[in-house]
Image (cartoon, rainbow over all chains, first blue to last red):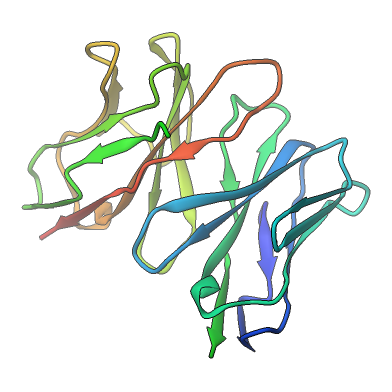
Length: 112
Length: 115
């Protein structure tokens, strides 16, 4: 798989349920960031987790990072219809000038 | 809150024409990036720019592409002779400097359609 691969590719849930998506990567990283993209729109930054952090919270978002497994997860609790979007993880390899390597994303649909 | 802006939001051009996509990064940021996203695909890195020169570029960023920061405010991406496969959403991003890799702030994107 490529750097920053998310799974599942698509996720359909009901409002109020939790949504969990995972990201795997291959190289050593400085940090990992999660972004949201509404259809045809720009990228909205959600949360950044540094390589020396294991878990981070922001509102209804919870991100974990396991550098030994080179994986991260994003949990959205109590989802809302407005959470419908594609979610991408982006990694910054340690040998780069901060360039992001994005995965293919997880498309989340939250139905009322 | 400061934000990255991009113009135009949508550009339609004929194959072979030159296009310039414009970005205004956040004013105190030092690192600038261009990415593209072909419809339905993932976001791909094109180029990073720091201290008025390219610091890193991808295989996509060939001789047809160039970047410039002409006036200390704008950051432009030029495609000299567009191809059909250049049709994509182009995102500009910027970040502050520092020892840690901070958040990159993305602009809303320019949708380029090559006919």
